[in-house]
Image (cartoon, rainbow, N blue to C red; front, side, top):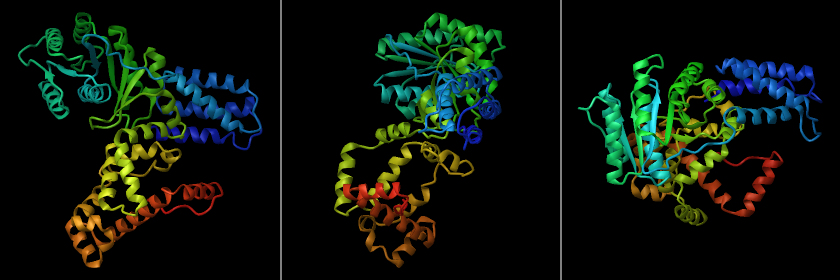
Length: 449
């Protein structure tokens, strides 16, 4: 996500490295590269021009402190303006009402149905709501079936009527059903439509006027770049939506939609989809996205994901086991599975400062841990609990049982040993202080996990 844009921003700021002050000449050269980076990312030309003009005005009007370099100052200003460009602050979804009604809109293939399922999952598990999914795509039976599959997977009820061909009547009946059955949020998945299709645009406008949703969301495929922004503008003129959802932000996206859409339609981006799984949905935080674009990572989001998956009581139990040197393969496997629940591995690594650039050309599969899991599952319960008993003969049997080889088993045994040593060392505050001193002084690092 945004790797190319991050790389180009990084190259632009290098122009100012070694400079003693910001001048009209060197800032103009840097911002020329920044504007080119934005245009390459498919950002609207007017938006890119206004962005660089604002940054230039702010940069030339500031004194460079001795504690920071001109490059650092320009990065700070760019961060502030990127954040403002994408909306400034996060905007929450409005689900007030009895029930709260959320209407989905967008083009065909933008990911509305999948997002509807993700939103139901988010509202149910993170907001404590009781959502009802409504299938209002009367033109594509597969969309109705897909929504039912998602609902079953999420344990969320789906309202549909394949005999009724009027989406307005289906939506009305769904709202009445929600009121009578105690659902406090209704999520209406509508058919994808082209902005030039007058009949279809009139239809969704009628649905909105009839049910009066508390929130109308425009779902857009971020991989379509500037076309997505133009489509959003046309949809907004017809149905005046409340917010934007960017899907497929984990794909080969250049970022133009995320950086342009707020300026063009003056509506906030509320959510981003970052994968196919039902929990691959994030609230859109402009400041955090600006961090990622400028290669600063997104540690806050990483910590939040970790907090959602890691149980405090389990963490205390694990700490006691580590202190007693009883950390085993069962614990190792448990930690691995919790990390997997946090999301796509490459996406998680990209949240660490500086890692986005390092991982630019690195392919990390979603099932990157499958070989490790296969090896651990091929161990007997006794071997998992007592790793020290695993000798050459046992390693050979484990390799055959897991479909791997001795080299991979030995590699995992070493990783496990290094992890165990590190955890033991980190559980001691004295060692942690020593480690921090070493890191500051550029001394020897700790064994890698």
